[in-house]
Length: 270
Image (tube, rainbow, N blue to C red; front, top):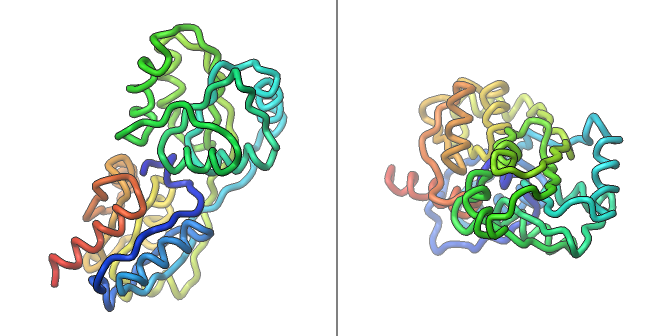
């Protein structure tokens, strides 16, 4: 899961046999349905989750631009729409956005695609392996039969790197990149901060570059005794840029794989 996929909705994680995380306190950096699902999966593995949302989402600073883009979308002004997170899907739903049948939709990963379908939209492209902007670009040529000059609406977070938009423009497409929402930091409680700094938490989950930044700003430096688990290679890179140490990286960009990485590390320590 990349920066994009980490902004997701509800998940359903299977419980594993045994309690490999018995006695572990694990910081879950997001609330809502995602945080609830991860907390439940951690409990099933014996852990005590500490749900402490570090980021939240706020409306775009340029509402008129977003509204104009969605009106153009509804009128059939775009050949493609790119959606890079489930939070963007929430924005589409909030505005009751209309995606005409003539407009195809590219979702950056399986979670975003699932959110689109749940909201009544479709997903025409979903990267099969690399759930990131780069993964999307790799599959774009095949999905569009090498077409050039397509009109693309790219809805994104205010802080997201415009890798996808720039890549599509280099392919010869006309891209209108519009901010759909902002990511903002959420202060954690004094108790959570103290528990982390004193080592009374065993692991911290890092699900995006935004979360990494907040972990480092609010809780850093993280004690060496605490396992820091990142959801993907890009998140690890983003963490390094803000000075946050990462100990393990999930094999896949999913919440399930992230928890498995923590389980593997706990089992190795046992």
